[in-house]
Image: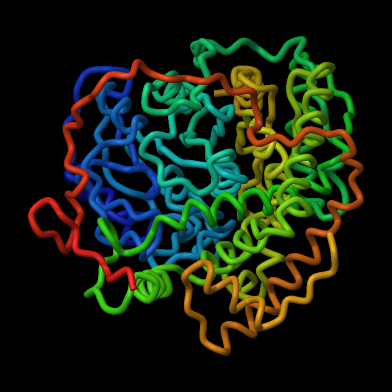
Length: 435
Length: 95
């Protein structure tokens, strides 16, 4: 059976692909023999790339995103586009007009989002595979932890965003998922580094992420705000188990405080919605994606296309973002949120003066069932991100690594490090997984 | 942040600015949901940000400008246009 036929077989069962690529070529390089899947919001030349949105239906990029081009240059076979929440707007991968992926551990449960398809495929692939995914507020960590795989969200600016269909430019980070820490680290090496097409890529040298040391002597901080109320005790038990394991391997454990954690959710959503509403302004039914027979003046035509092409959550965020940026409210909401973000970043900087890595549960609960999700109000969806938004706001790197199961579902340990210190989080992850 | 009354009228204005058309049912539902969300955002008022600089980015970025030289793109920016005439795109009337 060919690789693509195998992927199609698995997709029939788990629903993780939005489009297939017929590229089975495999050249020389670090990714020789690897299949690489690409989140739907990252452009692949010649393959429909719609970020899970009807408004981009039919869009065939005439170019590869930098991360895709770098993967090909290392011999990867690009196999297609994985499902996601529309533009990344979601935590459960249910906010889309397309496929809703099923959790490999229990098909009645969510994979998590927004990179749900990437996490699902990474978990079920029975061939060498790594996934290009993307996080704005937790879209790599959440699904990776709920599907029991490794996910790396690198430092903001470590990886080029050229060819990414933006959600929020000051928050978006392209990252990776894999079954093992080593494969994830190797893949991060491939896609990191400067790119003349993205001026926000950091000039800092890229270390060899696969050269991980042991955790002996590592200082690990446990942020007290990330445990206790709101976290399922069964999840917490697994998290503590893995922290104790790292301690037994020679790491030192101490409690730290990130006092602005509580406010990170509001700060994050205000900034993300403001940026999303400006980014989505360009989708107007001309030039690419959904294009209809032109009727009426430009306002009527744009409104008609956008109304048909955007889903419920996209409309909600665009309207909230529009409000946040309105004259008279901008300072109270947007500017205030940016100042609170400074406080959140300071929390992390202060903590990293005394510890190398912060460890916490990736998500407060295991993957919920679809019928439970259907009962939630929009604000309850947002609240599910409470443990992932702060490090995403601060742009610090984070790795989620499987650390046990609760109620038969995987639990992730979240390891966060200072800007550009991915290697520290990877070393701790390697210690937990003991590959 | 002041108390915001998210009326149907306000939702209508936001939808118009964002080029979206809403049904009366949607307008009512969004008014209720937006009201709950904006109310939750008010918690930021509890944070003292006097003298704090805003962070537009999470990390200090350096300017990165390339040499000002023309570059030929290999791909056609009109490749996805459904309704083109020659090298022009057909669009709606301005008025």
